[in-house]
Image (cartoon, rainbow over all chains, first blue to last red):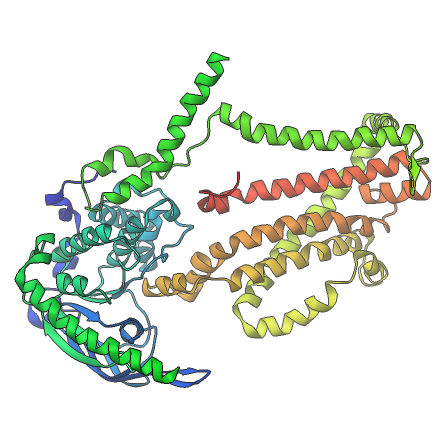
Length: 292
Length: 313
């Protein structure tokens, strides 16, 4: 049971009826995100702070979208409004036509780090979602094993999170979010705290898994390479107030591998993002200098 | 000599391996890479140090503790037999040898055990009530501002009142002597349990709550799966302190006891000027308190086994 299955058929263990329920006919597709005219304003001690301004965005089912922007540009805030943690001050956010009012298992979350329950074993962490959905203990354990095999951590099912490396913890986090078969996967700089080498391997893993899952992914990052490598579309945001300033299609062929990182097409896209980000970062600097 | 150092060498190797496994696995990022399955299964297990290592660390430390106490007993014996009197007066203090003889006499009789049994019963009842009430009130206060604002003034006001001061009211308000003693013991244990529970609950990690909510957890499930386990280290600390304070307060309560209890025994020896018995009573309370606190800590260990990695042993 605890053996790691070989690469080719490790996805055979997934519940394909649940995967198919999402794809199939276009009308039955799930995972369409619609953000319309959204402002998000926080009340702070020094007055209202506009984190997101007039953001509109549509994500098609099965699309991999990166929100890219400098630190503090409101990209995480925008994603948190899709997750249901932050209500928009103005405008509305819907997933599959339903207004988002609270977090739910249809939108799986992967956080930057330290988000596993330290008192639960790796398997118990992954089984938590199915258990909350009301399946029995045995079935939840079975689902957890399936998803741990998927991320290559079946051998660690009885380990506690604090005995694992950062990269392994993030893989458990991904398995935990996917165990609910969510139509949308929201990832908030999930590889930001990892070293460069581990990060690249994690990105490849994620694409492998996503190829089978084909759910909608919204991925927040400030790493341009990461955004270009992973996504179908890059949505670039400006710094305070956070506005969407560009929407770039990434038409690089899939499956993608590390060698892509040095190809001319990749470089062109990277340059395009770099210029946008650079302008924005300079603007942000100037604003900070004025304020200070 | 040679065989000894051999053992040490051998035991050192598996320990190192166990420590390194997670780091090795980190570099194997690709899922289902063949390297994962072979060596990594041990990483999750708590590798117990072998017996020889235990002797060198834990064993030695316990030996040091026993020696530290033994030194005090020897000094006390010398001070008492030689009539040490320099500001502190040992003239009327019975020597450990005298106390030991008296203790043997007590241990051969039946009375002494009855005292202990009565005290154990009172502490057990008082402690269980204090733990149940303390944890419930503590969680309520940690979770709800209303509960905190209503309950906190009582705690702040009542906590500094020493157990002895409660004796008259306890006698006036409660129907039996037994219930008065249990009430006073209960009060002692209650406050540390409440305050530590509040502290633990208020430190709940908001990222974990958000993770649980996005996985579909209800409020009750969050309380059960996130808030309580997260507060557990602090709650366990409160339980251990509460047990100590329970024994501390017991003596005050048993002053009003007419017949049995180790606190009564100590107090009664005091009125009868039986010096060795006073010391026996004191040390019995200290010993039982230590033992019970240890049991609480050991009993709670399974709740905290996820913390096992790292820290001092």
